[in-house]
Length: 114
Ligand code: AMP
Ligand code: ZN
Image (cartoon, rainbow, N blue to C red; front, side, top):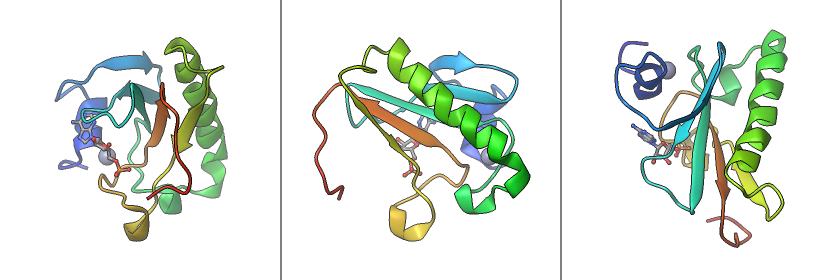
């Protein structure tokens, strides 16, 4: 995906503040944070959204989710609380079409979301 901004971040073609990395995934600070802690977790492999993840990649989803928890711990919000968001397709407000989990924390969240 030549034009995908998150593929470029995964390939280190554009910079990001990386907070976690392994062979499959990358976590980095959101460029426009909506909370004191706002980290994005992506697979290095390109998938447009949750709708694009094949059944056999359930392991990757589990890995992302557990590393989202790990990120919350590293950022010091695991016990105070955090929200994981996975916007999927148009009505969700998804803006970048490379699947990513948001981890938000460090302030009291409201519900319902906007
Ligand atoms: P979504 O609306 O779920 O697609 O969220 C996309 C997120 O990506 C937004 O929170 C943006 O602030 C964030 N974002 C876009 N470009 C970058 C970038 N170059 N580095 C870090 N975060 C980005
Ligand atoms: Zn991509």
